[in-house]
Length: 217
Image (cartoon, one colour):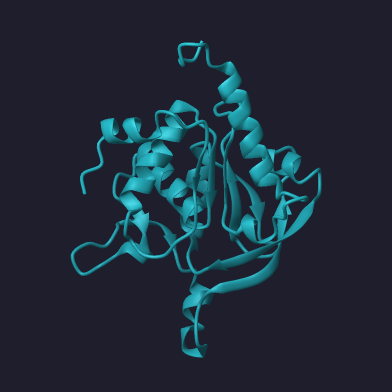
């Protein structure tokens, strides 16, 4: 399906925040990537969850780093294999395929980088514990290049080069964050997971900043 800037603009015109949730397979991925680009460039609050984290990395690699064919090896097929696999299975995951699967599942620790948006949302905690359900990761070979382009990996695995939270500097975007884990699994009606609270606060600020005509001042 052809995803044009006009189509994305039309569908997202009235939104004050966007969540791209988790999922598997290549169906609809280019549309998700187009939505990420729209949110990043238009400074619309964005939360990516699992696949939403991964497509944020892909979009950044394509449109900021200039790696136009960047993608995930999950979407490779007989007709196309990405030359820039910014998202892929890690080597240690591939090695355990014969044991019945390569997914990272269940509760795991996330080390938070001080001074980041994630650190603020975590209430200053050095480590948080969240639940995961995924197979693909940011390929370690691209981490330094993504960081040099301005992406911040503010949550990481305690011991391995596995990126678990990403964000953009708040000087460039009011709220752009992605989590490889699933915050909805630890969120409760009276104890909302902070990533959702932050998104809603950013959406309210955006709405309040709009003038009566619906355009940004």
